[in-house]
Structures are given as structure tokens and as C-alpha cells.
Image 1 (cartoon, rainbow, N blue to C red):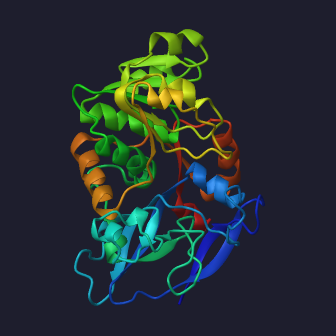
Image 2: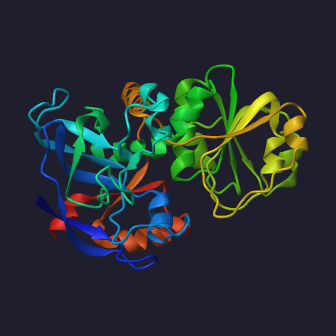
Length: 349
């Protein structure tokens, strides 16, 4: 075992602080990674505050947007070597045998994927995430990061990036398709960038127009304020695909009316409470409401390669680990453009 410095939440809603725990020594198929950067995802806050069902594991070391450099590999590792730039996203293992895993959809593993933190591996040990100095992961769940793009700005691609790329690809966003992104935050700004890079006509639906200039800079063709009732009148039956990145409570029925015939709205944000849905906006005109969760390892690597080809990275603000609690509060106030990334070198301070 290897002692590892980290920041952890000792209990639900408690401030994060310094913590030490033991990582396993690399097994024959493992990759040992020196963590250089870790993005802050809104789900880190939900889980550290035990807002998703009361089964969080404490002490909790959050973080599943992990970017770093390989320091050593197990004896049977073939994909990576010391010095490689790599990443770890939201999962670190899965059963590898169910139909979903065999199809490369490990995030939907019917046995249950092993999440990067706030979970348990198949030995029953708790998993600890990327707010730490190092991590050990099976090579099949490690990702190769873009060589020529900044590592810190690539870290959020491992959750925010794939969370938007997967539904955009699955519902065929591209030339000739009108795509709307609800919300311009950590997830939404990646949706705009990726949909634009895929060739779609992109619209941002945001509560106000205060981020309009940013939205256009990121690749949006159109930008509307949802606080204006005329937005919902003027945009009826406009979109082939709507991706809702917002976790706050809102009337999904009104947004469903913005879909064309046979079009789909996809939820990727997770509201704290159940959302009431009427049948009428779905029945007429044969609309669909769906959900999507991150992506499998193969698709996540495809996304990273796509971002490398199109020079797509996250817009970030880099912080030391000592400011993580302040960053959490700022995320809740939407006071970041658009993703916090922790410089893990600050753990040595």
C-alpha cells in the first residue's frame, strides 16, 4: 500500500480538508498515475453533501476529472508506459461480461460499474477520487489525453466533455440539425463547443442574456433568454435535439414543446426532486424524452481524439486545493466560467 495525500469531506456537508489514505500497489494490469489536475464537477458537491439519496461514503475524496502522468505500470500492461499523459474519468472498473460492457457501454454495466469515488470496488473497498496526489487504475479504464492540448483544460473533458459528446453523437447532431443546449455552465459550455464542432446549428437557452457574448464566442449561432415568455412562443417546433444540462427545477413541459416531430430532449443534469411531466407535450408531435450518462471507455477515448482534432478544451479557472470549499460555493452561485480545475501540485504546500 502507498500512503496518499488528499482533500476529503469527513462527513456530509462538512468542509473538505487534508486527509491521507492508502492506495493499492500496482497489480500486473494496473497503471500508477501522478495526478496533475482534477476538475470540480457539480456532482462532487452533491455527493460530498449527501444530496443524492443518503448513501454517500465518508470520508470522501471527490474528483472524477483526473489528468496526470504515468509513473509506473504493472508487468502485463501493454497500453501505457511511464511518462504518458493520461486521464481517468467517472469509472475505474466494470464487470466486463454483461451485454452492456461487451458493447463498450461500461457506464450502463448491469452488474454496476465501479465509480471513481464514493463507491466500492469489487473487493468491497471504498474508492477515492482525484482530489489526491496519485491514483492506481486498471489500464482498461485509463484514457490517453491529447498530446498537444493543455492538460489542465483537458481534465473536464473526462466528465463534462463526455457527458455532452455521448448524447450529441447518439442522437446524430451534425450538419443540417438544429441543437439547443439548456444552460451555459460547466456542462452547457462543452455542449455548445462540441455541437458546433460537429457541424450542428447551435442555440443556447439560458435564463438571461448575460452570457450571450460568451455563448457566441463558444460557437452558438443563436442565444435566447428563457425568462422571456416570447422565447417559448417563437421557438415552438424548432429543434431536432435539446440537451438539458440544468439541475435546477424548471418546467420541462415547456421545453418539450420546442421540439420538432420525432425530436428528442435529453436530460443530463440531475434535479434534486422529481420532475412532473405531462403526456400531451410528448404525444403531440411524437416527441421523446430521454436521459444519458457519461460514456463508455471507447467512446470517451473517441471524444478525446475528436477534441484533439478540433482543438476543443474546457474554459477553466485553475485553483489551489486549499480553495476548494470556496470554489464549491462559487459553483453554486454560477460564479465560474466555466469549470474549476485544481492544480494538484498545491497539495504539497
